[in-house]
Length: 293
Image 1 (cartoon, rainbow, N blue to C red):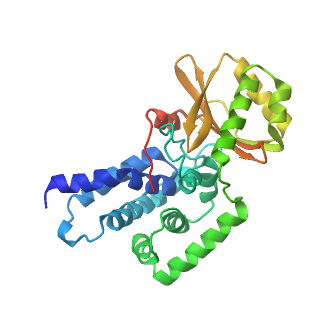
Image 2 (tube, rainbow, N blue to C red):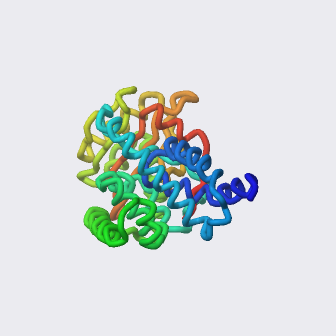
Image 3 (tube, one colour):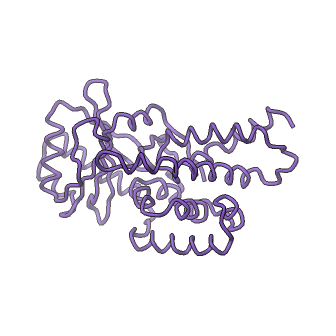
C-alpha cells in the first residue's frame, strides 16, 4: 500500500473525523492537532489489515482525542472565568439539512457535553451522533462492551434530562429570531430587544482573562439587554455569521474581531447567549470548516 492511498482515505474522511474530535474536545484548534497526530499514526498502518476504514479511523482519532482531553484537564481547571467551547465557523449551508448533526455541534449541546466524563462524552458522540456499534466504541475508549452500553445509557439519560428535544425547523426559527434581534440591537430598540429575550435569559462569556468580560454568568432580560446595547453603542460593527450550525453575531471593531455571540432559542425567545471573547478562541474563525456525519 502506498502513502498516497493512506492520504486519500484519510482526506476523504477528514470532515467526519474532524467532527468527531471537535465534539469530544469542544476545540477546533485541538481537533486539528489530534488529526495531525492521528494521520502520522495512520500512515504507518498496514492497510491490508484494515477492513473498515471509517471505523478504524474513528477509533484512532477518538483514542487520541481522549488522550488530549485528559492532558488538558488541568488547563481547563485553571482557566480564568468560564470556559466555553471554541466557536466553529461553517460554510453557509453546511449541516443545515441534518438536524442531528446541527444539534450535536450547537453551542448549547457542547456546553452540556462538558458535564459528562471524557469516556461518557466519547461514547455519547460515537453512538448517538454517528451511530457506531458498541464493539467499535468499546475498542475506541478502552472499555468492555458491557461498560460501554451502561455509559451510553447513562450519558443519553443525562443529556435528555438537561436538554429539550431538538425540534425540526428550529434552525429556521433561530435564524428568524436572530435576524429580528440583530435589527433591534443595531437600531438601539430596547423594547424590541426585550421582546425577544426570555425573562431569565443567561449571558455566559468566555474571555480567558485576556479581555474585559463578565467573569460569571449574568441572568435577566433587562441586564442582558443593557449590556448588549452598551456594546453596540461602543462603535462596534455587527455581522451575521453561521457558527455551530446556527446563525450567530460577530462583533468587529474596525477590522478586528472582538467577539462572537451565539444564541439558544426556545418558545420564540432567546434563552441563552454564549459569548466568545478570548482572542485565542476567535482564531478558530479564520476559515470555514466542513463537518459531516
